[in-house]
Amino acid sequence: MHSLLLLAAVLTLDGGAIRVSGFDAAHASSSDFSQILRVYTEPHSVDQPPLLGRYSVESGDLVFHPRFAWQPGLRYRAVFGAPGESPIEKVFEIPAVAHQANTVVTEVFPTAPVLPANTLKFYIYFFRAHVARRRLRSHSFA
Amino acid sequence: MSMKSRVILGVFALTLAASFAFAADMTEGLTSTGRATLKSATALAFGPDGVLFIGDPADASILAVDTGDRAAGKAAGINVTGFSEKVAAMLGTTPDKLLFNGMVVNPVSHKAYIAVSRGRGADSQPVILRVDTTGKIEELSLDSVKYSHVSLSDAPADSTDQRGQNARLQAITEIAYVDGRVFVAGLSNEEFSSKLRAIPFPFAQPTSQPGKGTSVEIFHGSHGRFETNAPVRTFVSYNIKGQQNILAAYTCTPLVAFPVSDLQPGAKVMGKTIAELGAGNSPLDMIVYQQDGKNFILLNNSRRGVMKITADGLDTYKPITAQTEITGVPYTTIDSLKGVQHLDKYDDRNALLLVKAENGSVDLKTVALP
Image (tube, rainbow over all chains, first blue to last red; front, side):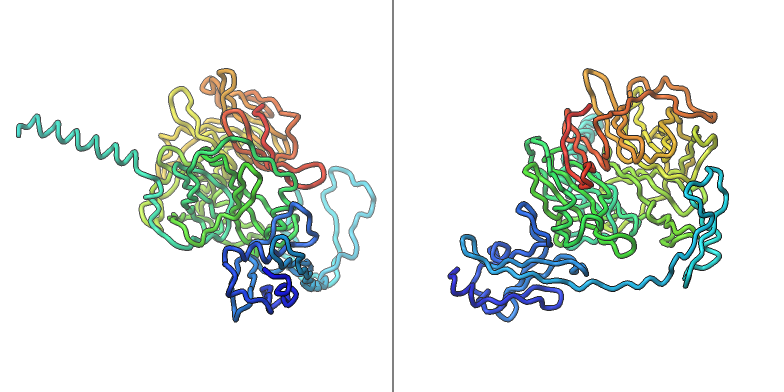
């Protein structure tokens, strides 16, 4: 692969896949795809295997489809280039999903730091509890 | 042709047919080709000719698949430090989102197969990984394989109870292939729910359903009562005084023997409890091995380490029938083996361990059998 071809390549996150455009993938051998484009979960160490996935050529672009959906909150590094060439690298960050706590424990009784082993009852006070009372009552703590 | 000649010819033909049947490639029993699917993957077992059996409790089925892994391999050992980090990187997640549910070594190629859940709970996705002696990790692709599967018709309903527990996940707790049958332990939807099933292989149909399993009852010494609802956690097939038995271990760790000849569909069988190995514990995997002319069982546990159990003269132990603490077949705890999540026999002298290291990482490690 010629370095000039690498310079023209652009890596983008296209929905659930990573797309390399500006590179004529149709003329590359499909057996080389996994060498030309590797995707790693960050942080990336030297002996870390690449992400599982499959490759396709779509509209002349080389596309990597991960085996599993991107995990929110993680970053993935795409490395594009032939062996011996200086590769183009790009890190894609998948936005984390913001979770808002809908149930908050406000108080626990008794409040002593150490409880006797034969304590039979304790009390948990919730704010915005979304757990049915019946289920709470029936729950046992081993 | 005389009657005698006909009989001789008939016997010859039967012998020939039996020889072909015996010599038949196991993969010929896999009647479907294409994409095999799993909802979950937990217990694993190997049969001959590279056939891998995968327990799928969420689907209440056993999948048999041709791995194509049948060439003899050198038993050079498998050692992968930071295995959990490497697997997480391959699956695009973090190590805390992985569960290693089962592990088996192909006794011919000496490659390891590991059942992994990516994620937890209802959204988790099953993956089967294969690791060779160089430490190379790859996915066992099920996209285009020869396979067949068998469904358990009386598995527990796929729903959570008031304590948030789903009995379906215990429909299959352990499997093993022994002499043309797949033995399956787990729960059924019956009141007498603990079952052992012996399912002939090849499975009768591509999507066949076996008959009822055998309901198995035990006396649990540390609980001081008879039990019919606790599932077998792990087991091995073991010959006791010329009789094939299933040696089964349960939570809180009774060790119980069931003669295989008793495991008839629909029957109710009382096992012989020959050891209590300690409460507050769940047994995980068992293997049988020989050392210096003696037989041993290696059992790893959730909270009681790895036990080396004496396996000679098991017929001489009296059944446990009263409340008791640790008693019966003697064992020693192997102090050098800590944090073992799964183990399998690697070869006659070594075991393969999936073990949690002090730094929290899970490693693959080959060690000499103790």
